[in-house]
Image (cartoon, rainbow, N blue to C red; front, side, top):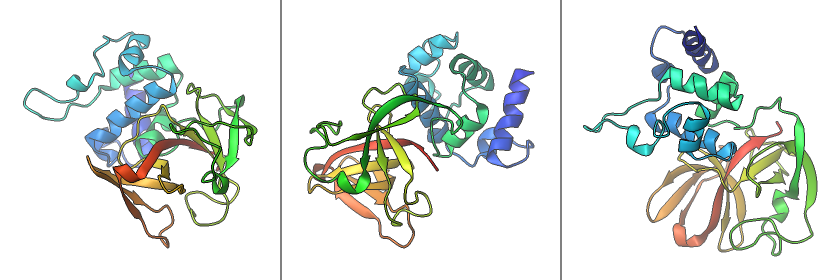
Length: 240
């Protein structure tokens, strides 16, 4: 019964009928679902092996080696395994469906339980707010109460202006998590060696460069050599 409920809920979160496989209904690829599992683990302060153990599964269930068959075909996590993970982590299926589509990791309804550093995004390019690894430093930060997140180095940035509409609007607050894995399609905050700080979508990453897509269709994207990037971290929540 639980697997059937999971099947229907996944179709509902993706806005399509339950007539076909849920992987197809969500119009997602193999990387999307595994990125969601990886990020769910990171947000709980777990490795994928730790996530599997918490759910009562074999520790290797979500290992990278299990994500493809020996002949190279994509292997997807089973609905029974996902249902156990949701129970073990108190994760709502609709939130997981949103995560698959690249939306927030932390449910909107989760109450404020932790105070984290807050800075205006427009200020973030100035010296003295981040160390070389992209972690908050100095006394110029404000604080804000937001949903609990296991990453002890997470921080919040406040959006100003309309350059990121319609995704983020003036006054929105985003949580940036240095511990969360970054994959193609994620919304990220990037700091360049020149001191620029920007919120974009990661369109592509190779061994030499990254391509960033603007969140506002009226603004151009950017391409940077990796040597030009100081750090890049995932946006895991927004107070929209």
